[in-house]
Length: 224
Image (cartoon, rainbow, N blue to C red; front, top):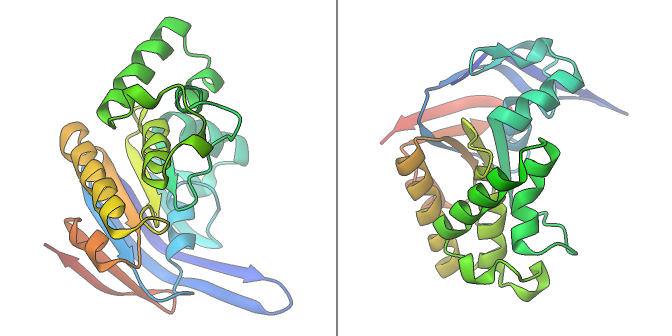
């Protein structure tokens, strides 16, 4: 599903900062993997490259057979729309839209027919246990419920790849456990490939594989 070959990422500002150095990594179709490492190790940068939100300075990034390192911004955006979804620590829900409307948003952007939107949104809200909260605005929902809405929005397009950046970071341990159980249910039921950046050992333990970064290099790769 994801293959990175000799990937390097350098940021040129007041000082030249090499964030990733010669990364070689393959994540198979249907895997659930965690990326761990200290702050500044390159975890989020690596996730952004996998999703086509950024380009490597050198090397190639293949996702579902497509080399995103050779795509322009429009091509990467269109690819994400149909293949890749994100879940973030901060939820990123539209505050003036209900849970149902937030979940439906990517389908409207993709110009999916109204009847199909209603069917898909109803299904994923049921999957995440929020059918009875569909009409509520984000500030009327708990943190755990907001993250469930964000996950429903991420899976409503049936992505091949789900990228999660600290998905339990803003939640207490009980709500975090619920979100991890939900992600595992999505992984097992849909065989969605999931790559999760986390500092949380419990979150990493929920994954089949743990990839450890330090100073922009892979220092460990453990399969459970």
